Length: 131
Image (cartoon, rainbow, N blue to C red; front, side, top):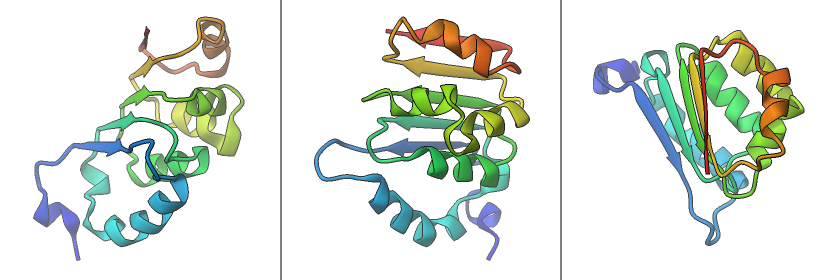
């Protein structure tokens, strides 16, 4: 089954969760079921709204499957993905740097962490931090 035939114009993946009983373990289970239907080779932008439900390892795997992504937008709930990028947890920063993502937009980041981002990620043309 070729998912690009089902969704030939899809180029953006929105991963959205809620704080109510959602967890990254549920995303792992559902990703195995939904993976054949996602046109990974067409994706150029990933938007993550919330971070309680996705781990660094899962995001790294999603980025690996969607190898043409050049824009990553993260709206943090708890700062876990920002810390994972900073400390290269599950090789997340390495994956982001390898894919030469053009821009990254991170919302709700602590101002103390912003200077550290410039040390851990190097290939970006645009970095946005929004409060």
